[in-house]
Image 1 (spheres, rainbow, N blue to C red):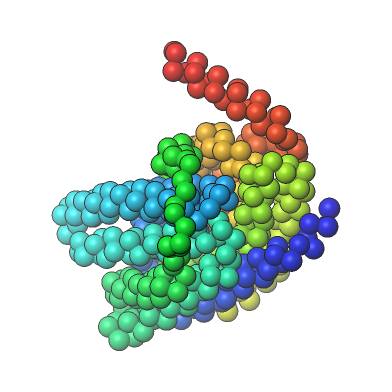
Image 2: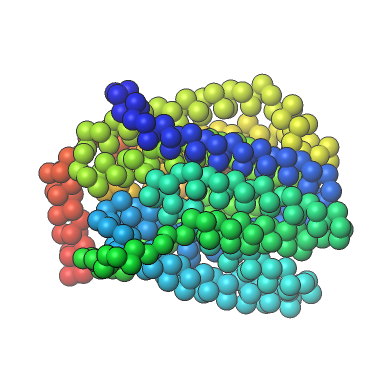
Length: 442
C-alpha cells in the first residue's frame, strides 16, 4: 500500500500543497487577528456578507467549469488539446462571471433602494468577484496539470497581500467595509497579473495544434450537474450567516463569521493539502484505467482525512480558549463556545468530500448532486430552527447535523469501498445512459 507513496513526484506535490496551505493559513490568521482589532463586529459582518455573495458567484457561476477543466486536463494528449481546453473553460467562465456580476449589481441596487444603503459596496463586490474568479481559474488548472509549485505560490502571494492591503487601507481610511474590499481587490489584481505573466503557457510555434475532441460538449456535460450542486454547497457553507443576519443582527454575523472562518480554515487548509496532493493523482489513475492504484490512493487519502478530523477536534476541545485569545480580538471572544460544534461539522464535511471522489472520477456528477441536495435540505430545515431556538450556538450545532447527513448519503452513493475496474465502469455508464434515455422517453 505504501509503495505508491515512494513516488518522488507525489512527495513533491505534497510539499508544495502543504507549503501553500500553511503559509496562506498563517497569513489569514494573522490578518484576521489584526483586522478584528481594527474593525467592529458590525463592519466585519458586512464584509462577511458581501464576501458570501462573491463566494456564491464563484461557486455557482464559475467553479463548475473550472472543475470540469481540472478533471479533463489529465486526458489531454498534447499541448494543442490543453490549449483548446483552456480556451473553452476560460470563455465559459467569463460569460458565467459576467452574468453573476449583472445579477449581483441588480440585486444590490434593489436592496439599496429599499434599505437606503450604499450600492457602491455591491459594485465593489462585483469587481472582487472578477479578480477572485481569475485567481481560481489559474490556480485550479495548474493543479489539474500537477503544477503544484506554481499553484501554491500564486495562492500564497494572494493570501498574504489581501490582509496586508486591507489592513493598510483601514488604518489609512478608517473603519469602513469598502476599504477592506478595495484591499482584497488590489491584492488579487497584483498577484493575478504577476503569476499570469510568469506561469502563462507559451504556444509551440514549431508544431501545429492537434485537437481530436469537442471540449465544449465535454465541459458542459461535466459542469451542468455541478451548477446546482455548487449552489447547495454555498448554502451549506455560508447560508447560516444570512439566517443569523435575518433573525439577529450584523454584529452577531461578525462574531459567527470570524469564529467560523478560523475553525473552517484550519480544517479546510489541512484537508486541501490532502486534496491537492491526492486528487490529481487519483484522477490520473482513473483516466488511465489503473483502478488498483487509484483505489489504494483513495483509501490512503480517506485514512488521512479521518485522522485529521479526530486529531483536530480533540486538540480544539483542549485549546479553544487559547485559540480565541491568539487569533481573535477580545470583543469577539464571546463566540468561543461555538468552536467545538463547528469543528465537528468541518471534519464531517472534509470526510464527505473525499468519500465522494469516485463519483467525480467516474464523471457521475448527477449522483454527487443528489448527495449535496440531501445536505442542503437538512441545512435549510436545521439552521433556522436551531438559530431561532438557541441563537448563535444553535447555528454552530447545526453544522454537524447537515454535514453528517451529506457525508452519509455521499458515501452510500459513491461506495468508496468498491474497487471499480474498466468493466464495472462500462456497466455503470450503460446504466446511466439507459436511465437518461428512459427519462427522455417519459
